[in-house]
Image (cartoon, rainbow, N blue to C red):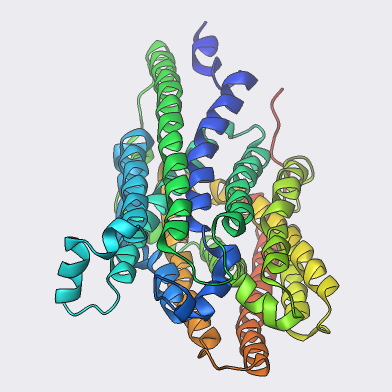
Length: 471
């Protein structure tokens, strides 16, 4: 009877997968909102045609703002709160914060803001582009909420799927989140006309769609909370029946931060995360700005080509996650994924200017984008105890966001051109941007090789062993 009480929800496949769906939908909405301009980034190359008045450098600042609060301590503090106060309370705060940030961005892009009193007030403070200022602030708030919500989701999946299909579950969650990216990238060219003047209403429509999806995500988050409360109640009843008490060693302590940061394998995973994701996510923000001059594409062709990036992981991430569950070899898959990403960026930078190479590059980039996360995220619970996972994942996200803050700003500065710039200049800028991504990919490969070596030297960590699947 005790065992039944303890495991009824964890052993129920229906409950587990319902929980996964509820956790995935907020991330779907988050990824959608974060990528509302990814396939129309070329419109920032000519600010004269954009009512917002932003250029590529401004867009880079906006994109980098996503990581601003995360880098300046927000992620670490909030990760600690996750472990001390629990996923349900802390996660709810930051899911709501994510919605608040998206609401601010939507307002900053709206026609109502342009001539309103808030814009006038921001202008009076000396900011030349009020919409950029407010949208950047909103993006920073949205970014902190989104990253902590992501940590809460990942920690919750580890809790519900540990000893079961954990890599597959994390892979499916990533796939559904990236479906949000794919949806945004498909819809944006339909909503925002990038030829001729781009009115504010078109930019705002994308933000409003994202805000609506965010609200749906909040609803499903509260459904998850009801499941999680029931599971914890069963665990308490089972522990009481067994006269079990929580050990002092099981409680989170601030000294655990030092233990995590001195864990060599944790640091290697965190470094792989930052260099790898900068090759993908920062590139994605400027994909069309690189594609159009490099391969001589029309705006709509470049936009649809870029959607290959999120669609490929939707298919392959769950497959690779299942492979890791049953076959292991996680560090090997990380190396292979990083190498594939490097090959992709080499093609982007130096292949002949024929569109087929663009399609091949995106397909390869998507496969790499599937392999590394499917193997990487499920490795963290193998080296960090469950009661410290919130802090551990937050520290990884914190390190990752250092890159996510700086790289978009650097790439936006490289791609910035004047209205009179010729195509040769734009091609040169695109190649220079690719050199940055190639360098980051090389570092990611080196880190993944070091992680493989550490795994071979410490087999007790079980990084390369399959996850145990319970029937």
